[in-house]
Length: 159
Image (cartoon, rainbow, N blue to C red; front, top):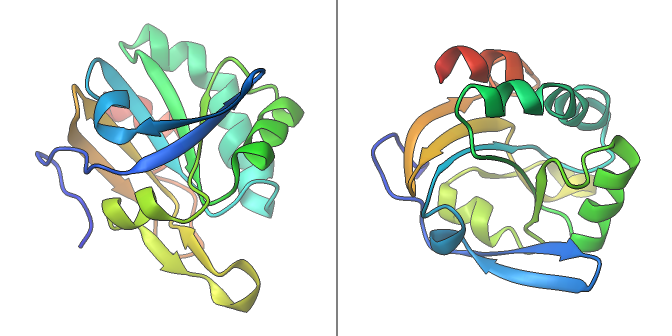
């Protein structure tokens, strides 16, 4: 079941790679304080994710923060090394927290895990969320194949 507005972010583990290594984070602690825009996508280095989704967030991260967002995070069912390399390749490193969900634990807990065929397997569906102090306040789920409501320009209208 997909998380809905008014519900607390479920407990799960994800990883973030930094210069010292890979750190495991608990979702409850990470999202506990402040306002976070979390956008999820099927995969690093995939077509729409690399051509539009991540680059547009990199372009608009300062506008989101100016509108009251404390942090912007990207969730994908990839390993932490891939997420770090993808961030570096797109100028997101240090601007957007890249949440690696290698076993789809967090995606499943949020109810956004989907099977995308034999090549991609289990992934996170494309969406964006506004999370205030650990509680989901707005969910913006995309239709299959779409990229509209999870864009940073749309998210700005929802803040």
